[in-house]
Structures are given as C-alpha cells and as structure tokens.
Amino acid sequence: MKSTILQTATRYLHPILLLFSVFLLLRGHYFPGGGFVGGLVASIAFVLHSVAYGTHSSMKILRYKPLSMIPIGLGVASLSMFLPVFFGYPVMTGLWLDDPVPVIGTVGTALFFDIGVYLVVIGVVLTILFTISLETH
Image 1 (tube, rainbow, N blue to C red):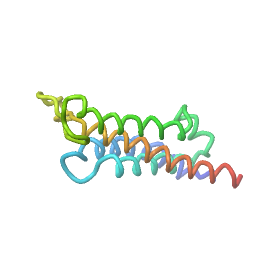
Image 2 (image 1 turned 135 degrees about the vertical axis):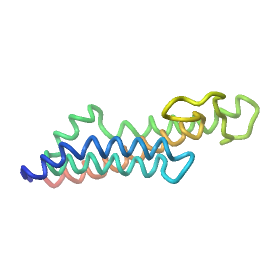
Image 3 (image 1 turned 90 degrees about the horizontal axis):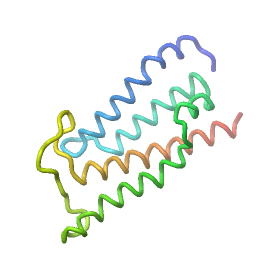
Image 4 (image 1 turned 90 degrees about the vertical axis):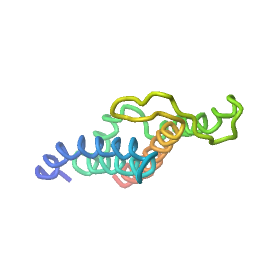
C-alpha cells in the first residue's frame, strides 16, 4: 500500500513506538510492563513500517533476520536464570547491583531476563508476520 498519509504518520510513529517499547521494557521489573509487552509494542512498530513501506524496507532497517533474535533472547534469558547458581543461590533468584544506574534504576537479573523475553517476542512475531507477508506477494 502506497499511502502518503500512512508513510508520513509512520515516519513519526515508528521511533515513538520503539522508545515506548524500551520504556515498557525498563519499567517491567518494578511495575506492569516488561519484556513481553515491550516486545509486542516494538513488533507493532515494525509491522506498521512494513505496511507503510513494504516488508523488504522493514527488513533492511532490522539489518538481521528476526529469526536470529530468538536464540539470542533465549540465551540472555537462560543466562540470567542460571547465573545465581554460580553464586550458590537457587535458579531464578534475583541478583541486583548495589548502586542504581541513572534513568534505568536498579539493574539485576530480572532486567536481563526481560531483555531476553523482549528479543524472543520481537523475533517470533516478526518472523511469523514477515514470512506471511513475503509468501503472499
């Protein structure tokens, strides 16, 4: 679809949606939000771009195939789950840095688990939707 209105709106909405998805990601281990919701919002940003400019254009923005985000996300989430075992704690015990990081807040294994989920959700959603889009054209 070549709509000038949609392309103009997408030019402004795409970075705002991506920024909002990062906000939801970082907010998630304290309040509602997190990797899953943030990943869905980031996926929506790329789907909107795909509708406005085409799937190939959206895939150029990502630089890597969305399928490659899935094992990276699973690796980050798994590492954050099993890292406490090396310190003598049970699996999925939250470990936190002593000093908060400006803007982000307290950094711990919960944040890295959310980042892994964020990457997996983006990878799965965009792989499915881009595959469907490319198969129909």
